[in-house]
Length: 209
Image (tube, rainbow, N blue to C red; front, side, top):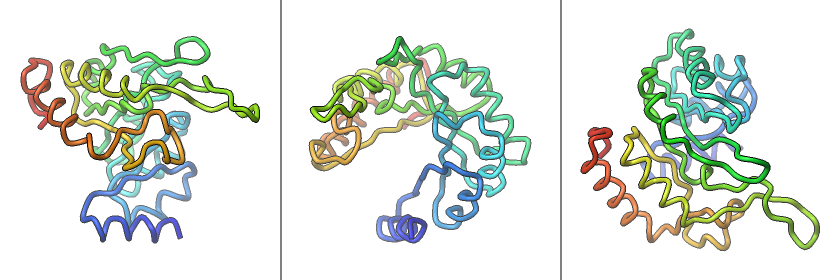
């Protein structure tokens, strides 16, 4: 049912579709209806998952884990390449800082690119504060500030990236997840225009458009 819904999204919008996979058997199930298979950050070292995604021939977006160094991410991409798939992206979503925060080391963007792979900045999850909020019922969930999403995007655009990842919602306060981090849909265009302008003005990388 999930695969059918993803296919319907692609047909209705005419846009490329990306989805996470969490187990190797899921890769083949969704490959016919999506354009990009995303490897979640916490699973970026799972060899069987990387192989299964690469074997579909689809673009593979590997989210670098908060715990993972750049060499670990590069090794993950090489695992996909070893299956004959050169269409691999590496997503930077920050490094764990203490117990409840993340920080983006902008040097990792250049080091991933120097490793021979396109790099994507995941500004939404890089702005996350893991397990930083305790609800009235005692449940722990992630926090963060959507203003930091823009800060991270601007900095990454200046350094130079090949793509940006942003979660958006028409009504962020009603989003089912990452409520504090969802970028308002009506403000997406001006943000992207600003990001592209920064990228074009910077000498970091000229191909973002």
